[in-house]
Image (cartoon, rainbow, N blue to C red; front, side, top):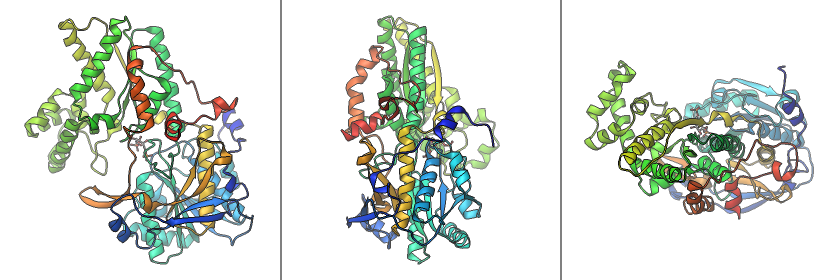
Length: 549
Ligand code: FBP
């Protein structure tokens, strides 16, 4: 066993909070609501999910502790790491043991791949205890393989059958939970006797809706980034000579950027959804930022901090078109492009794009041109985490300021530092919020299994209130679905939650950003606190606080 840190040692003893419904064990009393429907494309979703569609929302109350026949369950971590994953597994384990101490839990290794390839390990008291309240997914590791073909489902079935598994828990984001639902439907329709339950995970915060108030990991990751941003703000305010451009993760939605802005009050923060809504050009974005730099310079403040969401480039309409053209161009000339040197690709692209996109492409710094021509991910998407948007904007703002200086519209100094915070937060030790929420989600998944349910997502709500008031239950995954066009095909998917411009978190930001731009109104959140007064240890995100008000 590796040496563990003093914090890890002390934190192992933390007893996560549970909703009242689960405090007597996972054998709960179930109340069923009315039959449900889907968020859109109801008839199509109904036709695809013949046997699981329409299930009722479930609410749990504490039940009588009772022993059920022993079972073996399996668990998978799917997709990007998010703080608290180990607590979901610990909660699931404890919940299963509360149903029958002979229940067993098998962890499939490296995500869905483990299930398909039959790579697994049995989780024991010793293993679970070593990972309680720790960050990371290293107990069983994660992977991004998608469970979506009938061959995958068949392999999943035969491997589960061989291990005696009758219940599977898939811990993942919107895509993984969509696939959990497909698997649930396959097992139920074919009468294969395996229940499937999903748990909402992703630091990106974009798996949420009326019934799932947040995805786990968002709280901790945002606290880690906000601590770092606060430290940078204090440095900027001390040295008074740099502008810091900080990019934060979030593959698509800007929830992380917005939450960090609400926690730290930077001089600017870009929200991709607003950029798309207002159809802003790259030049407009750059001009807005340069104007903020200039107005601070006019007050003698040649420093500042700004937050940029990782997914921004795909929300700027002209760049979205450019990327789509590049995707087609690179795919159609794959062999030719593969033989080219990295630096040769932009010239090839520029010569073959439409005039409009060629103009946009030419306006980008050379480094970004090269990055946009780089390899796509297995689904043909640009790997946004590899595009240095923060560098691009810093460079372009610098160029704009030079022009403004020449016109007499700016008279300051501009020196930029760039940062990217993503991996720093994904495996952090979970905050109390995530430690509690995750443990509850896992324990609640055991309750869903005990209640004989399939195709449900574990749901714990009302989490801005004390745990006594948390509501535990299950939400049919089909209820969150609609049909979307993916890779040229219509597919059922859980609707992704982007930042709502009419939502309270964005409105609060929009009402304050002009002030934060010119004033130095920084807030320094400091590191996550695990021990001490409740008002510093048991915080909830500003997003959740504002949404629930
Ligand atoms: P999930 O949606 O799977 O939770 O992952 C989110 C994320 O952390 C994004 O913020 C980021 O763009 C992506 O994963 C990076 O993942 P990878 O390192 O696999 O490219």
